[in-house]
Length: 154
Image (tube, rainbow, N blue to C red):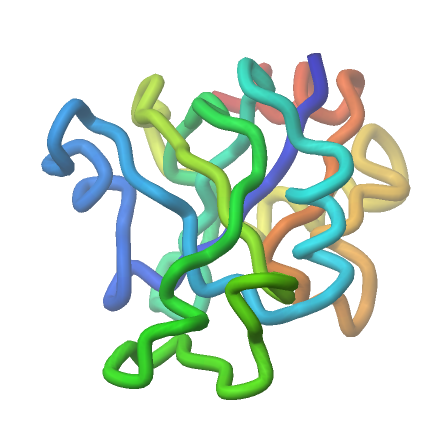
């Protein structure tokens, strides 16, 4: 099993939105960065777990845990000209963008804020991609040691 961190702006889609989704499950669409896409397409597997991170909001941080519920498959929003994630260069016969399904596992007892995570950047969380200067990827891998430490903060 691998571990991940996936980011979403709660104004667009929050952990609570996932809880309200049918079956507490939804597709993770709209990823438009090649490195993040490659993580999904090549490395994410059904059964992996991910932290659900709220970004670009007053309380940025890890809000919950999801399970990756499918292997990657073409992101249909790239082909829909009425969708905000439309990509005119994406071809259904040779898809450029992919998505996975995610399923709510649980909300954390509290949001583990970015500031708290940063306070451990030089020790237990050294090397965590989220804490690298300039990192803006919406999907990043998390080591098992980092995963376990972050859960211990809860």
